[in-house]
Figure (cartoon, rainbow, N blue to C red):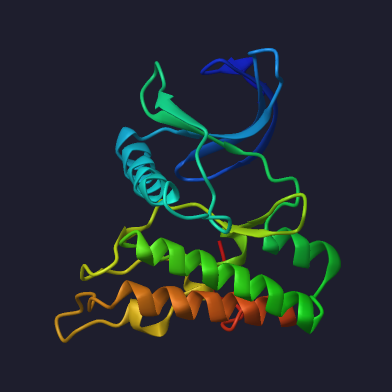
Length: 218
């Protein structure tokens, strides 16, 4: 499949990944600065609007605090064919999942340092009134200095709202999948779910496997 030459004024360099929500490109600005970004393009206008709203709530908090362990959005807009795009800083370190697949389990001290950064990011996210609901190694990115940043807020919800099922089974808290007598999802607290996801991610960093081997991990 050939790549588009440009999207929303950004020159497309390569494809970084694609999934149910859309596709992520490595791109650079066409303003003469040639700044590299990860351009996340959404096929669904609703999914785009949902994730953009999460970033906007974080930006309101960013004015009063340093949110160094959360991804930020540089630009956003609608796409001509429907959906929308988010321009995010390109983090060359890839995800924690990439790191472990390439190098194997991390040394305990490095894993502890990353876990502290991840928990700091979750504290910042919860302070903005949001819970992530899909904390996993694939959604934690590393910048050029090795600093961890939590991203992908597509499943985020209000922190104190009752929640339904969601997330990635291999890294999800068991209570996310509990059913009542009518086989309906039983709502659970988002904050507790995020803490479990952080613990499951730390387990993966130290062992190179999820707490539930064989369960879907993406």
